[in-house]
Image (cartoon, rainbow, N blue to C red; front, top):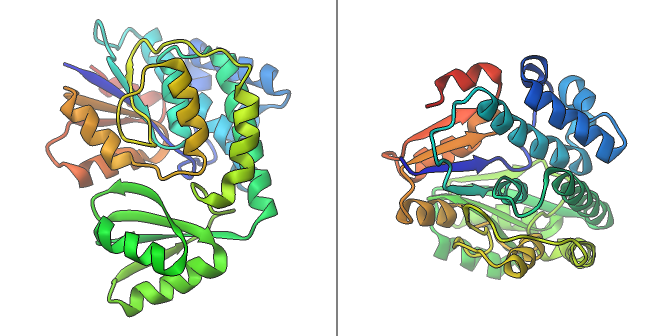
Length: 305
């Protein structure tokens, strides 16, 4: 086996996530308690009880998903469910890329909590300062989407799976692009309910501030093979990892490319850590033969190994 850990991105959060981990795993509970001390507010309470309006805030859901993913891993290790020498790879979608770097030892847990809290805060601020929108386009290829983006002055934010691409930009331009896409015969174009235009130039203020924030934080070389969303390729130099995390705030998430690169590098099994099984669904859409498992709560850990 060559195992890759997958970590979920923003949008997969749901009230109650991690509650069973906190109740039944001392290792997971310790991470939630440490995160609360680092943040200065009760992450566990918001994660487990909501309200949903609070949990969906960018500045809240990013640390909540980061801790949830690593709490699942901690509970798995505590149970001795990880095969010897595994995992060998780690990757994550958008926010999940930060979680993957932490799992790979690029920085410690407390540092990771601070990083995602600041990333979330800065991105929420950028959302509040702009009027952005996003839309999912299903069943179209990258060339056709690139032409649409050029025509309406928007950007491709996510290449999630074959025929599943998300566009992002100023709200009025995205709305015009939705109408234009349908007029061009694109059958499934879905406006998304989001706080802003993630992974677009509207996040530039967040990118600049995030770069300044990360400057003084030391990064180590990863112990696992990791992939950056910005290129879909491996990255190992600490300075390059830091640059990739900064660039990712305003650039396309090449998730399909990351997954294909991981498979080409020898991954034989993918284990997803996060609510909802979103990444498992994308993986199956990309390549039906891939072996994928999803872990969201304590009971799911019984399917490991």
